Length: 204
Image 1 (cartoon, rainbow, N blue to C red):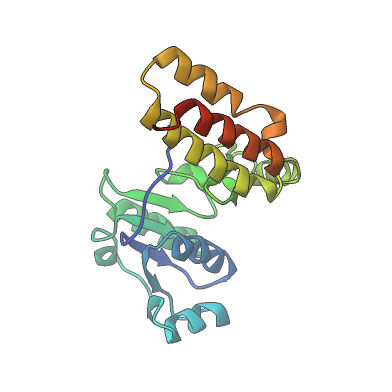
Image 2: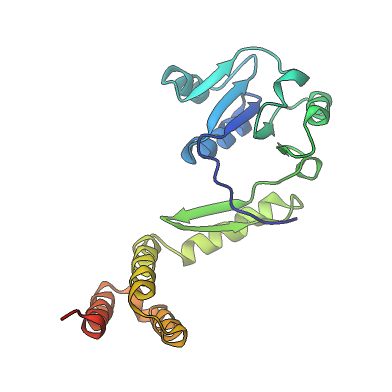
């Protein structure tokens, strides 16, 4: 499997199915700004609320092969294996298709993941054991707690400042590595680091 991070903002995402699995998938799609269409005769209360708010388009019917080709990303989340197989065959080779209950059938799987601001940590077993992936994700989420959101923001701002002000590649490397020291997660040390940078590159 080739691991990537996709920008799906405003991309058309088709979710076939309206149960709890589909709901969980849709929640993540909406968080990333996808344009979501749901096709299913029935849906959870959460999907219905999204539709009422105009956050998803819900077509209350069974899906067919003609629904598939126009979507950038397709998630097949029904309990009917035969229907999933039929819709999967209707997809083009260049479409992204996930079969929720049978990860190895589609063209991609969704890893277990968590975010801390701009930091995203994902764990995948290639569909082999979603439970193991979730177990490892939970262990990592305890290690990389909420403080990492601010820390990553600090690193991002420092990186931009260094690239803007320092022209020597070796000095850039040293400064960037210095910002990764363990104590830099502390706000006081971040302030001291910033002060050192300002003193080093202050303009006359």
